[in-house]
Amino acid sequence: MTPPCVYAIATMDTKGSELAFVADCLRAAGIAVKTLDVGTAGPPTTKPDISRELIFGGKLTETHRGLAVTAMGQALLSYLRREHEQGLIAGVLGLGGSGGTALIAAALRGLPIGLPKLIVSTVASGQTSPYLDCSDITLMPSVVDIAGLNAVSERILANAAHAMAGMVQHKPTERARRPTLGMTMFGVTTPCVTAVRQALETQGYECLVFHATGTGGRAMEQLVDSGLIQGVLDITTTEVADEIVGGVFPAGPQRFDTLLARRVPLVLSLGALDMVNFGTLESVPAHFRGRHLVQHNAQVTLMRTSVDENRQIARWIAAKLNRSTSPLRLLIPELGLSALDAPGQPFYDPAADRALFDELAEHLTTNDQRQLIRLPLHINDTRFAAALVSHFEQLAEPHWRNTPPAPLT
Image 1 (cartoon, one colour):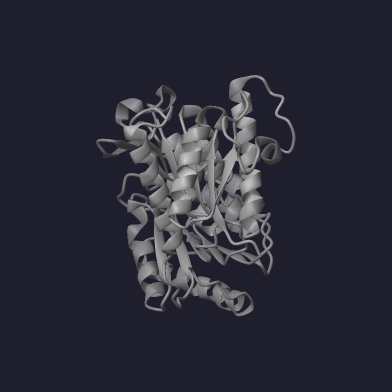
Image 2 (cartoon, rainbow, N blue to C red):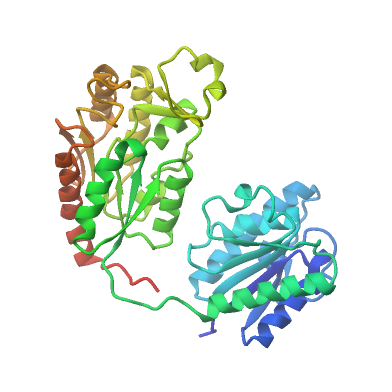
Protein backbone atom coordinates (compact mmCIF):
# COMPACT_ATOMS: atom_id res chain seq x y z
CA MET A 1 0.00 0.00 0.00
CA THR A 2 1.25 3.48 -0.90
CA PRO A 3 2.15 5.36 2.30
CA PRO A 4 0.34 8.67 2.91
CA CYS A 5 2.10 11.89 2.02
CA VAL A 6 1.59 15.65 2.21
CA TYR A 7 -0.34 17.14 -0.69
CA ALA A 8 1.13 20.58 -1.51
CA ILE A 9 -1.26 22.72 -3.57
CA ALA A 10 -1.03 26.01 -5.46
CA THR A 11 -1.99 27.69 -8.71
CA MET A 12 1.28 26.69 -10.31
CA ASP A 13 0.90 29.07 -13.25
CA THR A 14 1.87 31.83 -10.80
CA LYS A 15 3.27 30.03 -7.75
CA GLY A 16 5.11 27.03 -9.21
CA SER A 17 8.60 27.88 -7.94
CA GLU A 18 7.26 28.76 -4.48
CA LEU A 19 5.42 25.43 -4.22
CA ALA A 20 8.52 23.56 -5.42
CA PHE A 21 10.50 25.26 -2.64
CA VAL A 22 7.96 24.12 -0.04
CA ALA A 23 8.08 20.56 -1.42
CA ASP A 24 11.88 20.55 -1.21
CA CYS A 25 11.71 21.70 2.44
CA LEU A 26 9.27 18.89 3.25
CA ARG A 27 11.41 16.27 1.55
CA ALA A 28 14.51 17.55 3.39
CA ALA A 29 12.55 17.01 6.62
CA GLY A 30 11.87 13.41 5.64
CA ILE A 31 8.27 13.93 4.51
CA ALA A 32 6.90 12.42 1.31
CA VAL A 33 5.09 15.05 -0.75
CA LYS A 34 3.10 15.46 -3.96
CA THR A 35 2.60 18.81 -5.66
CA LEU A 36 -0.84 19.59 -7.10
CA ASP A 37 -1.55 22.28 -9.69
CA VAL A 38 -4.94 24.00 -9.43
CA GLY A 39 -4.16 26.85 -11.82
CA THR A 40 -6.95 28.11 -14.05
CA ALA A 41 -4.98 30.34 -16.44
CA GLY A 42 -1.57 29.78 -18.02
CA PRO A 43 0.56 26.61 -17.94
CA PRO A 44 2.43 25.67 -14.75
CA THR A 45 5.87 27.19 -14.35
CA THR A 46 7.19 23.98 -12.80
CA LYS A 47 5.96 20.45 -13.44
CA PRO A 48 3.44 19.23 -10.83
CA ASP A 49 3.13 15.67 -9.60
CA ILE A 50 -0.64 15.92 -10.08
CA SER A 51 -1.87 18.01 -13.00
CA ARG A 52 -4.88 20.29 -13.03
CA GLU A 53 -6.39 18.12 -15.77
CA LEU A 54 -6.23 15.04 -13.55
CA ILE A 55 -7.83 16.94 -10.66
CA PHE A 56 -10.54 18.48 -12.82
CA GLY A 57 -11.19 15.31 -14.81
CA GLY A 58 -10.40 16.95 -18.14
CA LYS A 59 -9.60 20.36 -19.54
CA LEU A 60 -11.07 23.36 -17.73
CA THR A 61 -12.90 25.35 -20.40
CA GLU A 62 -14.51 28.04 -18.21
CA THR A 63 -12.98 31.43 -19.11
CA HIS A 64 -14.58 33.63 -16.43
CA ARG A 65 -12.02 33.70 -13.62
CA GLY A 66 -14.47 33.59 -10.73
CA LEU A 67 -16.43 30.70 -12.20
CA ALA A 68 -13.22 28.86 -13.10
CA VAL A 69 -11.91 29.18 -9.54
CA THR A 70 -15.21 27.89 -8.13
CA ALA A 71 -15.25 24.93 -10.52
CA MET A 72 -11.65 24.03 -9.75
CA GLY A 73 -12.32 24.30 -6.00
CA GLN A 74 -15.19 21.82 -6.27
CA ALA A 75 -13.06 19.47 -8.36
CA LEU A 76 -10.21 19.71 -5.84
CA LEU A 77 -12.55 18.81 -2.98
CA SER A 78 -13.81 15.74 -4.82
CA TYR A 79 -10.26 14.69 -5.69
CA LEU A 80 -8.93 15.14 -2.14
CA ARG A 81 -11.88 13.28 -0.63
CA ARG A 82 -11.20 10.29 -2.89
CA GLU A 83 -7.52 10.34 -2.03
CA HIS A 84 -8.23 10.64 1.70
CA GLU A 85 -10.70 7.75 1.63
CA GLN A 86 -7.87 5.61 0.24
CA GLY A 87 -5.59 6.64 3.11
CA LEU A 88 -3.19 8.54 0.85
CA ILE A 89 -3.16 11.97 2.51
CA ALA A 90 -1.10 12.72 5.62
CA GLY A 91 -1.75 16.46 5.46
CA VAL A 92 -2.46 19.30 3.03
CA LEU A 93 -0.46 22.49 2.58
CA GLY A 94 -1.63 25.25 0.26
CA LEU A 95 -0.25 28.56 -0.99
CA GLY A 96 -2.54 31.32 -2.19
CA GLY A 97 -3.47 34.91 -2.76
CA SER A 98 -7.11 35.81 -2.35
CA GLY A 99 -8.31 33.64 -5.24
CA GLY A 100 -6.02 30.71 -4.47
CA THR A 101 -6.92 30.84 -0.78
CA ALA A 102 -10.63 30.79 -1.60
CA LEU A 103 -10.13 27.85 -3.98
CA ILE A 104 -7.97 25.75 -1.66
CA ALA A 105 -9.85 26.60 1.55
CA ALA A 106 -13.17 25.56 -0.02
CA ALA A 107 -11.71 22.11 -0.60
CA LEU A 108 -9.97 21.83 2.76
CA ARG A 109 -13.15 22.71 4.65
CA GLY A 110 -14.66 19.50 3.30
CA LEU A 111 -11.91 17.28 4.72
CA PRO A 112 -12.19 15.69 8.17
CA ILE A 113 -11.32 17.71 11.25
CA GLY A 114 -8.03 16.48 12.67
CA LEU A 115 -6.32 16.00 9.30
CA PRO A 116 -3.48 18.57 9.22
CA LYS A 117 -4.37 21.50 6.94
CA LEU A 118 -2.32 24.67 6.49
CA ILE A 119 -2.55 27.53 4.00
CA VAL A 120 0.08 30.24 3.59
CA SER A 121 -2.01 33.18 2.46
CA THR A 122 -1.82 36.86 1.64
CA VAL A 123 -5.24 37.34 3.27
CA ALA A 124 -4.54 35.46 6.51
CA SER A 125 -4.39 38.63 8.61
CA GLY A 126 -7.74 40.00 7.47
CA GLN A 127 -11.34 38.82 7.76
CA THR A 128 -10.79 35.07 7.62
CA SER A 129 -14.19 33.60 8.54
CA PRO A 130 -15.28 33.16 4.89
CA TYR A 131 -12.22 30.97 4.35
CA LEU A 132 -12.30 29.02 7.63
CA ASP A 133 -15.95 28.78 8.69
CA CYS A 134 -15.95 25.93 11.27
CA SER A 135 -12.92 24.06 9.97
CA ASP A 136 -9.54 23.50 11.64
CA ILE A 137 -7.51 25.00 8.79
CA THR A 138 -4.38 26.79 10.01
CA LEU A 139 -3.79 30.08 8.17
CA MET A 140 -0.25 31.49 8.10
CA PRO A 141 0.20 35.09 6.88
CA SER A 142 2.63 35.28 3.99
CA VAL A 143 3.68 38.84 5.07
CA VAL A 144 4.91 39.55 1.53
CA ASP A 145 3.05 38.48 -1.59
CA ILE A 146 3.69 34.94 -2.76
CA ALA A 147 5.47 36.26 -5.85
CA GLY A 148 8.99 34.94 -6.01
CA LEU A 149 11.53 33.60 -3.55
CA ASN A 150 13.34 36.14 -1.38
CA ALA A 151 14.74 36.54 2.12
CA VAL A 152 11.28 36.92 3.66
CA SER A 153 9.21 34.51 1.58
CA GLU A 154 11.76 31.70 1.91
CA ARG A 155 11.68 31.96 5.71
CA ILE A 156 7.86 31.99 5.81
CA LEU A 157 7.49 29.11 3.37
CA ALA A 158 10.14 27.05 5.18
CA ASN A 159 8.34 27.64 8.48
CA ALA A 160 5.11 26.45 6.88
CA ALA A 161 6.77 23.30 5.54
CA HIS A 162 8.33 22.52 8.92
CA ALA A 163 5.04 23.19 10.72
CA MET A 164 3.32 20.70 8.43
CA ALA A 165 6.16 18.21 8.96
CA GLY A 166 5.64 18.46 12.70
CA MET A 167 1.89 17.94 12.40
CA VAL A 168 2.19 14.78 10.31
CA GLN A 169 5.12 13.30 12.26
CA HIS A 170 3.71 13.83 15.76
CA LYS A 171 0.18 12.51 16.15
CA PRO A 172 -1.82 12.22 19.38
CA THR A 173 -1.22 9.05 21.32
CA GLU A 174 -4.03 6.54 20.95
CA ARG A 175 -5.83 5.85 24.21
CA ALA A 176 -8.86 3.89 25.24
CA ARG A 177 -11.92 6.05 25.78
CA ARG A 178 -15.65 5.94 25.87
CA PRO A 179 -17.46 7.58 22.99
CA THR A 180 -17.30 11.35 22.58
CA LEU A 181 -20.63 13.16 22.69
CA GLY A 182 -21.74 16.51 21.28
CA MET A 183 -24.23 18.80 23.04
CA THR A 184 -25.72 22.19 22.15
CA MET A 185 -26.19 24.92 24.75
CA PHE A 186 -27.22 28.55 25.19
CA GLY A 187 -26.87 30.61 28.35
CA VAL A 188 -30.61 30.18 28.91
CA THR A 189 -30.32 26.35 28.78
CA THR A 190 -27.08 26.07 30.74
CA PRO A 191 -28.59 24.39 33.86
CA CYS A 192 -30.05 21.60 31.73
CA VAL A 193 -26.97 20.97 29.58
CA THR A 194 -24.61 21.18 32.55
CA ALA A 195 -26.62 18.55 34.44
CA VAL A 196 -26.67 16.28 31.37
CA ARG A 197 -22.95 16.73 30.80
CA GLN A 198 -22.02 16.02 34.39
CA ALA A 199 -24.20 12.90 34.51
CA LEU A 200 -22.66 11.47 31.35
CA GLU A 201 -19.11 12.42 32.31
CA THR A 202 -19.45 10.41 35.51
CA GLN A 203 -20.10 7.42 33.23
CA GLY A 204 -16.83 8.03 31.38
CA TYR A 205 -18.10 9.84 28.30
CA GLU A 206 -16.21 12.79 26.88
CA CYS A 207 -18.68 15.63 26.34
CA LEU A 208 -18.12 18.51 23.93
CA VAL A 209 -20.49 21.45 24.41
CA PHE A 210 -21.21 23.78 21.49
CA HIS A 211 -22.64 27.30 21.79
CA ALA A 212 -25.70 27.26 19.51
CA THR A 213 -24.73 30.36 17.53
CA GLY A 214 -24.88 28.93 14.01
CA THR A 215 -21.18 28.16 13.84
CA GLY A 216 -21.60 25.96 16.91
CA GLY A 217 -24.16 23.73 15.28
CA ARG A 218 -22.12 23.49 12.08
CA ALA A 219 -18.93 22.69 14.02
CA MET A 220 -20.66 19.92 15.93
CA GLU A 221 -22.02 18.35 12.76
CA GLN A 222 -18.62 18.61 11.08
CA LEU A 223 -17.04 16.72 13.98
CA VAL A 224 -19.76 14.09 13.65
CA ASP A 225 -18.98 13.83 9.95
CA SER A 226 -15.27 13.44 10.78
CA GLY A 227 -16.02 10.60 13.17
CA LEU A 228 -14.76 12.55 16.19
CA ILE A 229 -18.22 12.67 17.82
CA GLN A 230 -20.13 9.41 18.13
CA GLY A 231 -23.35 10.52 19.82
CA VAL A 232 -25.36 13.75 20.10
CA LEU A 233 -27.72 15.38 22.57
CA ASP A 234 -28.98 18.31 20.50
CA ILE A 235 -30.72 20.00 23.39
CA THR A 236 -30.61 23.64 22.22
CA THR A 237 -31.96 23.81 18.68
CA THR A 238 -32.46 27.58 18.69
CA GLU A 239 -30.46 27.92 15.47
CA VAL A 240 -33.54 26.67 13.63
CA ALA A 241 -35.52 29.70 14.83
CA ASP A 242 -32.89 32.02 13.39
CA GLU A 243 -32.87 30.03 10.15
CA ILE A 244 -36.64 30.26 9.74
CA VAL A 245 -37.31 33.77 11.04
CA GLY A 246 -34.11 35.52 9.93
CA GLY A 247 -31.96 35.90 13.04
CA VAL A 248 -28.18 36.26 13.16
CA PHE A 249 -27.36 32.74 14.43
CA PRO A 250 -28.66 30.36 11.74
CA ALA A 251 -26.81 27.08 11.23
CA GLY A 252 -27.99 26.88 7.63
CA PRO A 253 -30.47 24.74 5.72
CA GLN A 254 -28.35 21.59 6.22
CA ARG A 255 -28.86 21.55 10.01
CA PHE A 256 -29.48 17.96 11.27
CA ASP A 257 -28.53 16.41 7.90
CA THR A 258 -25.16 15.04 9.01
CA LEU A 259 -26.54 13.77 12.33
CA LEU A 260 -29.14 11.75 10.45
CA ALA A 261 -26.81 10.60 7.68
CA ARG A 262 -24.19 9.35 10.15
CA ARG A 263 -26.87 7.50 12.15
CA VAL A 264 -25.34 8.40 15.52
CA PRO A 265 -27.39 7.94 18.71
CA LEU A 266 -29.46 11.13 18.76
CA VAL A 267 -31.64 12.78 21.39
CA LEU A 268 -33.07 16.21 20.63
CA SER A 269 -35.02 18.89 22.43
CA LEU A 270 -36.36 22.39 21.73
CA GLY A 271 -34.05 24.54 23.82
CA ALA A 272 -34.32 28.32 23.26
CA LEU A 273 -36.81 28.00 20.39
CA ASP A 274 -38.72 30.70 22.23
CA MET A 275 -36.30 33.27 20.81
CA VAL A 276 -34.71 34.69 17.68
CA ASN A 277 -31.32 36.41 18.00
CA PHE A 278 -30.28 39.80 16.67
CA GLY A 279 -27.36 42.13 17.38
CA THR A 280 -27.74 45.52 19.03
CA LEU A 281 -31.24 46.89 19.51
CA GLU A 282 -30.63 49.29 16.62
CA SER A 283 -29.78 46.37 14.32
CA VAL A 284 -33.17 44.66 14.69
CA PRO A 285 -34.96 44.82 11.28
CA ALA A 286 -37.59 47.53 11.13
CA HIS A 287 -40.46 45.10 10.59
CA PHE A 288 -39.64 43.44 13.93
CA ARG A 289 -39.36 46.64 15.99
CA GLY A 290 -42.89 46.31 17.37
CA ARG A 291 -42.33 42.74 18.56
CA HIS A 292 -41.56 41.53 22.09
CA LEU A 293 -37.82 42.27 22.40
CA VAL A 294 -35.41 41.73 25.28
CA GLN A 295 -31.86 43.09 25.38
CA HIS A 296 -29.80 40.11 26.54
CA ASN A 297 -26.73 42.36 26.65
CA ALA A 298 -25.40 45.38 24.76
CA GLN A 299 -24.63 43.25 21.69
CA VAL A 300 -27.51 40.74 21.66
CA THR A 301 -31.24 41.44 21.35
CA LEU A 302 -33.75 38.58 21.64
CA MET A 303 -37.19 38.44 20.04
CA ARG A 304 -39.94 36.14 21.27
CA THR A 305 -41.10 33.65 18.62
CA SER A 306 -44.77 33.89 17.70
CA VAL A 307 -47.45 31.22 17.28
CA ASP A 308 -47.11 31.28 13.48
CA GLU A 309 -43.30 31.23 13.56
CA ASN A 310 -43.35 28.28 15.95
CA ARG A 311 -45.61 26.37 13.60
CA GLN A 312 -43.16 27.00 10.77
CA ILE A 313 -40.24 25.92 12.97
CA ALA A 314 -42.08 22.73 13.94
CA ARG A 315 -42.82 21.81 10.33
CA TRP A 316 -39.18 22.42 9.35
CA ILE A 317 -37.87 20.21 12.16
CA ALA A 318 -40.43 17.48 11.47
CA ALA A 319 -39.57 17.40 7.76
CA LYS A 320 -35.91 16.90 8.65
CA LEU A 321 -36.43 14.25 11.31
CA ASN A 322 -38.91 12.31 9.18
CA ARG A 323 -35.94 11.38 6.97
CA SER A 324 -34.19 9.54 9.80
CA THR A 325 -33.34 5.86 9.34
CA SER A 326 -31.93 5.18 12.81
CA PRO A 327 -33.37 5.58 16.32
CA LEU A 328 -33.89 9.08 17.70
CA ARG A 329 -35.89 10.67 20.50
CA LEU A 330 -37.33 14.19 20.58
CA LEU A 331 -38.14 15.31 24.14
CA ILE A 332 -40.49 18.26 24.62
CA PRO A 333 -40.31 20.30 27.88
CA GLU A 334 -43.92 21.46 28.04
CA LEU A 335 -43.40 24.00 30.85
CA GLY A 336 -40.85 26.15 29.07
CA LEU A 337 -37.98 26.22 26.58
CA SER A 338 -35.46 28.51 28.28
CA ALA A 339 -34.74 30.49 31.43
CA LEU A 340 -36.77 33.35 29.89
CA ASP A 341 -39.74 31.08 29.17
CA ALA A 342 -41.11 30.47 32.67
CA PRO A 343 -43.81 32.06 34.82
CA GLY A 344 -42.85 35.64 35.61
CA GLN A 345 -40.16 35.74 32.91
CA PRO A 346 -40.37 37.97 29.80
CA PHE A 347 -40.81 35.21 27.20
CA TYR A 348 -43.38 33.12 29.05
CA ASP A 349 -46.04 32.38 26.42
CA PRO A 350 -47.78 29.00 26.81
CA ALA A 351 -49.87 29.56 23.66
CA ALA A 352 -46.81 30.07 21.46
CA ASP A 353 -45.12 27.03 22.99
CA ARG A 354 -48.22 24.90 22.57
CA ALA A 355 -48.35 25.79 18.87
CA LEU A 356 -44.79 24.47 18.51
CA PHE A 357 -45.53 21.26 20.42
CA ASP A 358 -48.84 20.50 18.72
CA GLU A 359 -47.49 21.16 15.24
CA LEU A 360 -44.57 18.81 15.90
CA ALA A 361 -46.95 16.14 17.16
CA GLU A 362 -49.03 16.52 14.00
CA HIS A 363 -46.22 16.50 11.45
CA LEU A 364 -43.56 14.23 12.97
CA THR A 365 -44.13 10.66 11.83
CA THR A 366 -43.45 8.55 14.91
CA ASN A 367 -42.74 4.83 15.20
CA ASP A 368 -40.61 2.49 17.32
CA GLN A 369 -37.46 4.13 15.97
CA ARG A 370 -38.54 7.78 15.93
CA GLN A 371 -40.23 8.84 19.15
CA LEU A 372 -41.67 12.10 20.46
CA ILE A 373 -41.94 12.34 24.25
CA ARG A 374 -43.85 15.21 25.91
CA LEU A 375 -42.95 15.84 29.55
CA PRO A 376 -44.72 18.26 31.94
CA LEU A 377 -41.37 19.80 32.94
CA HIS A 378 -39.35 22.96 32.28
CA ILE A 379 -36.19 22.48 30.24
CA ASN A 380 -34.00 23.53 33.17
CA ASP A 381 -35.73 21.17 35.62
CA THR A 382 -33.23 18.56 36.82
CA ARG A 383 -35.83 15.88 36.08
CA PHE A 384 -35.86 16.89 32.42
CA ALA A 385 -32.06 16.60 32.28
CA ALA A 386 -32.36 13.15 33.84
CA ALA A 387 -34.91 12.15 31.19
CA LEU A 388 -32.56 13.27 28.42
CA VAL A 389 -29.76 11.15 29.88
CA SER A 390 -32.02 8.14 30.34
CA HIS A 391 -33.32 8.22 26.78
CA PHE A 392 -29.83 8.69 25.40
CA GLU A 393 -28.58 5.65 27.30
CA GLN A 394 -31.46 3.60 25.92
CA LEU A 395 -30.34 4.46 22.39
CA ALA A 396 -26.60 4.39 22.89
CA GLU A 397 -25.91 1.05 24.53
CA PRO A 398 -27.58 -1.13 21.84
CA HIS A 399 -26.01 1.01 19.12
CA TRP A 400 -22.46 0.67 20.43
CA ARG A 401 -22.82 -3.02 21.17
CA ASN A 402 -23.35 -3.51 17.45
CA THR A 403 -21.08 -0.73 16.18
CA PRO A 404 -18.32 0.10 18.66
CA PRO A 405 -16.83 3.57 18.05
CA ALA A 406 -13.32 3.63 16.64
CA PRO A 407 -10.63 5.01 18.97
CA LEU A 408 -9.50 8.57 18.35
CA THR A 409 -5.91 8.64 17.09
